[in-house]
Length: 404
Image (cartoon, rainbow, N blue to C red; front, side):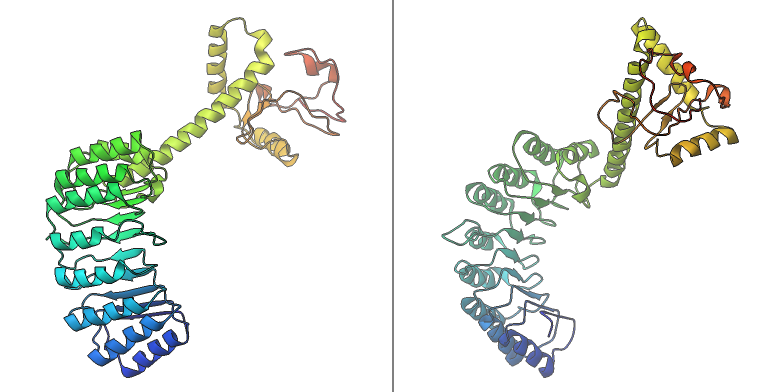
């Protein structure tokens, strides 16, 4: 029997109930998910009774019409009273209202382990917010909620959302907070953001379609810029926010690639990749320039001459490898393992993208090739001609053959 049982939009039969109960009683059930299913009252009570006694289950999901009546709420409360292993409870899409939320929160306060709660779209109002705030602080060995979803509860007023922000500041271990599709407005959202300044644990904040504007976004930017935070994902989609502010927020987040569904996020990602390429290109050019200055420093008498020479070499680079003979010589160098990056023509130096230290000496090898592209044709000459440019060679490397 697998540790996960998931049933969606089906009529739960007696056989399915037996299978669930056997898995729970046998200590094999880890996750149970029932969504928008039809089930008899007796079968429903039997399943929750087995879950209450199960010591292996970690996640219980009863979503979209699975906790509709007072009897359903009572069965769930009895389950929570007995169970001590659950870490997550997802009951979104149920018409719990304030009365049902009061009873469920009364049991959750005493549960030792539940740290993740989803009560989205449960027709909650201001009264329910008072019960939920009691679940935030750490009490004894109980850590308090770490993940909370309150999405799509439009009955909660801005005043209650503001009080929720105070609760966040006073005592909160939340890592993920989902408030999307609520009528927060800038006032309530600002109170929540201020509350988060006192909580350094939050990593994900979802404010999609919450009727916020530039003032809230600027406050988020200020929070990220001025205060320590683990926040790495912010969702601001479907709000009237200036794209430039969103881009500034993105720049302060630690992992830009994890910021999904954020306004103008695609352009931000492209910009980030382009910036990385530009940075690498600049680094490579700086390395090449450093090597060139080392080999030819004695020949340059002023900064103007250095700049002119670098411009000439950059222009010559475009015409370095054109003929078949050029490709043959370049291939020969690559076969000998002399190149790990780009070859800088006319200077006899090589760029290595991963090399940070400057080249200070020539390694001694049994065979070697000095690659030059003078007039694009290789010529053979004596060893005495090796030092005709740059510093005088005081010691000849041990080459058996050399091609210039």
